[in-house]
Length: 199
Image 1 (cartoon, rainbow, N blue to C red):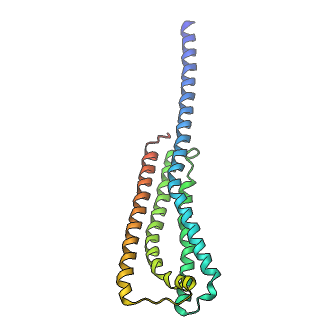
Image 2 (image 1 turned 90 degrees about the vertical axis):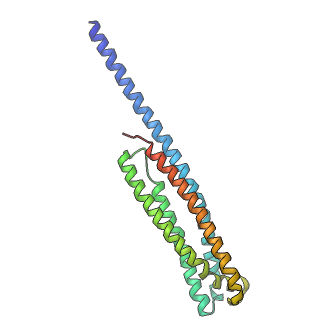
Image 3 (image 1 turned 120 degrees about the horizontal axis):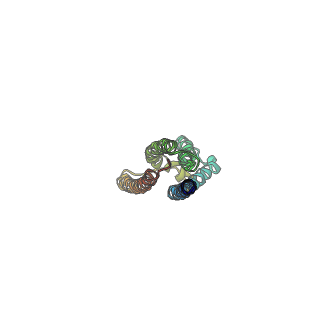
């Protein structure tokens, strides 16, 4: 009789322990989900601010489109508007894919597959963005000069020796700073997910 009671008590304790373990795992996963979102927000918020700035610049060009009366300003204006509208959209879509990963409902394997795919897409978008942004840095000058100053773009050869190196240095420093920050956040996110055992 005592053995049967001990077995029943032991089975009851095992069930309680298993439920406690499951509850603890759920709490850990939910906390990890919050930390994951917080880390991604460090990328998402600056991207949203950049998107607002890009859309505002595109809107300024669209409102003043009739001022782009030369072939150079018209062509570069159209290219600038297209880049300013679509580049942030691609970036935000890649971030949304990462942000929508649900650690609570997915198993660990599916989470890591989704994360790897989202991270790869974000990396591709960032690499393309660097090249397009470099191109945009030069192509946006004629239409913005026309809209802001009311005159066609013109520059002396001596000015090129000053402005182009300054623009290149600024672009290189800014891009490397942003990429270092993004890589640091993504490495931190990698560690967070790799440390999570959801099985």
